[in-house]
Length: 256
Image (cartoon, rainbow, N blue to C red; front, side, top):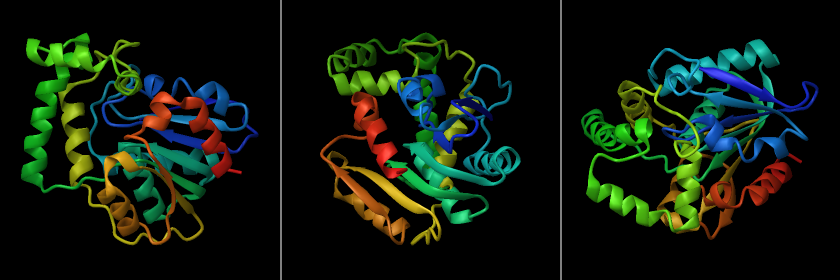
């Protein structure tokens, strides 16, 4: 795992955690310049998802423990806030629950918080690898049918934004292994999220995208004891993907 910092050291620390299969430069590159005016922005590159990292992704819990160790070593165990994009939101949830580090705000970015048993997760992970590995490495899908469908989806600004957040349309991501994709996807599904997390000193904010469906709001209310829910008539991570200026404004408002 790598952490890249932007901004002045004396500013409060804002930790940014990417989504599934995402390269940090694609996921947060469009918002780093604005956020770094007010925060010391610490962007996480998961193990196996950075060109300077020769290891493959192991598990979500390994990343959580590495994050706790890094925050303790570099920031004295305290940060102002952590924002988790999709998969990253699940990791923020675990950081809040474990309470090994201190943060004032934990921000969940419309994470789906899907859970599955080992067998189902293994099957789903293998399917994802088969579908996505070639695209991550070459920018193209092996299946001509999927490629044709994919090209049509890019006419929608939302879909273009999501793809841009993965980063493959802008950066070489050929350093990402099949093992990293599989392990990241599977361990996210099988790392059990606690119920009724009492965030204690941490205020948990959830960016709830209504177009994902009511069941996701119910999940947030299930997993957190007192979540502050920001309801938006948007799709999954649409605020960050399509309206980065508004996303920055909301993050700043949450962090006072």
